[in-house]
Image (tube, rainbow, N blue to C red):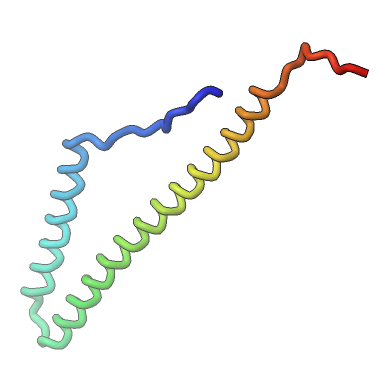
Length: 98
């Protein structure tokens, strides 16, 4: 039976660094904007909690999407293994005895 390897393209170090840096810069910029906003403390706290909730929900959404993709990959691997087994067992030149 032939084995198949997962077609996985690893994330380059530069892309990972760019993603982390852009996340930190954007979060810092919005955090500074909320901190220096000329409003009452309650409004500033509300906006900070809203920012925190947005960030945590974005991480949760990304994790759910990743998990769903992994589940679909696993299901397709099982189907592919079944197909390979059937093809390996099939012999078109086999003569059936009567």
